[in-house]
Length: 441
Image: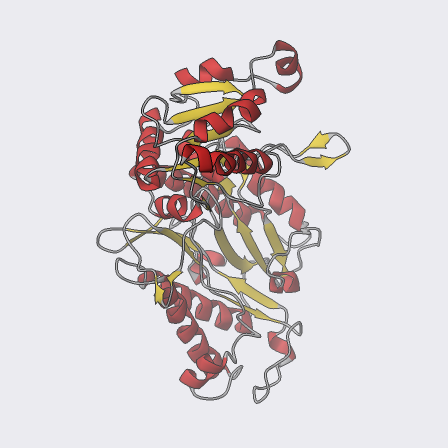
């Protein structure tokens, strides 16, 4: 098979999606190739919604989902087989492969989309298409819809409206199937091994980029497609920059190294792990105090993951532990509830405690439905990643103590990937160690 998942998994997803569409037809485009510079392109990365439903990994394709038709409910438009193009750019499945390997009821060359789209959409109660994201396909969808509206006075039939497919698709993607969880376990295994290797090799005098190379080499050696996101390898004060990716500084004795890195599999499922440890193998007193506090917050937040709980509750658990600890260390003053309500800790902890994880690193799915936070259910996967970042970059809130220089330049984050199970949770990244003893040598 072209992917690690069997064809039946994609067929089941399409069946669920078609059922939820009712009488609405959906147009889901693949990702295009994106130019890096001149005539050189970035490595291709498929659109996650398109991949979730098709497993088809070629650019500029379009999938139609047509519940109003009996004979052809899944139609693919793909690049035609063309020997000259394949010499330059590699193998294509073509229309025959789209049917035989990817389960399409019918397939056509993508060049025929302008002529055929209107016919396929005829008779649908509505059209599901994400506007504003697919500039090549959007005019064709609007033209087909407009033609239906023009004919409506005579035919009495036209799609009633244009709606986004995202809510339906993203609700499906939020709850991972057993096969998806296996791929996430694999991505987390590879990612965790890379973190263990990085801690073994890191030492004063190396560059951040040399450590990055060790991590990413392991990803590739283990058969991953590559990184899930730009690896963050941040020594010392660089760790206080949340999305630091320069990775160009030298590692210094007496400082911490924060590594936020994960791999992406060929099927696009991702790992996302952060670990922080002393570069020369020993925490200073201040480093240890803050590390123990972040670890306590992270472990409490992980323990708060389970059916019926919420991502908001996980975040709230971490914040309370952090604020209580920061008060004890003298970095905050005041009552815990008041500090939390006022957000007086946000110059030290300014991000949420986690996000959904899956085909996207920051995966799709709502966190709230109106006024109500979404309850965690088995199959959901989220990261749990509290941190502390002590620097002069943000002003100290009025009424809070100035930061003693001995704390400055310490940035710590600890992140695990956690799957919700029937009776609690599974920490997918548990093989990446995080105890104080494991971080020292």
